[in-house]
Length: 113
Length: 115
Image 1 (cartoon, chains in turn blue, brown):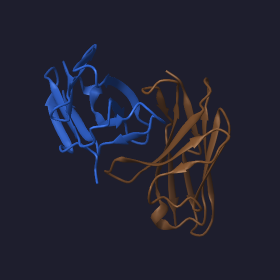
Image 2 (spheres, one colour):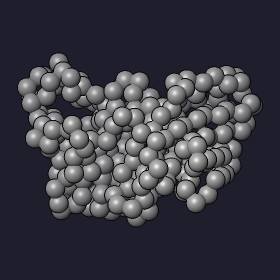
Image 3 (cartoon, chains in turn orange, red):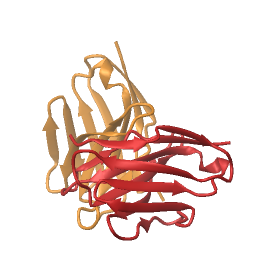
Image 4 (cartoon, helix red, strand yellow):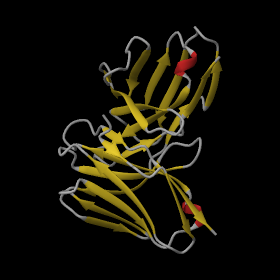
């Protein structure tokens, strides 16, 4: 049972435009969410996070939106740059306990120059 | 951010042999480390949670006798794949946890190929 889902395996966006990556989850106990970026043959790198007490968190070109009632979060990248091309994973956790994260299947973003 | 290293980055071994993968937190102490595996085009799947000085907690479906985890110090956790088979070929990634939920730093991963 996939508790965290990223239904779009890939996304192509023109440089300078907005990239929107989506993530859905099923476990209502999740209260902390993260986005990671991963290049081939490398470990994921932390991008941005959001706690369930917020509905938006912004860091430079990256904004994460959380809709708890819909159990949905999204990552917006504006403006998109070719260097943003990577696989993006969302991950969810219950902050009580051992910080165990459940990852989505990833979305491969390609930003076209 | 904090640095986590893994060694080796790539390993090829014969079926039936054992392989040890090391995960080190280089500039911080990690009481908790996590081991993941990733199959091609799939998600990172948590295998086990490793706590310093105690036994690892394995996820459902992960054989603890096959994937031996040792977390002997605050900066080192090891994963040993015992009696490896071709189906164990995968990308293994560790992460080290900090004091807050979002403080989980990933290693670069180890590509294991079992022939």
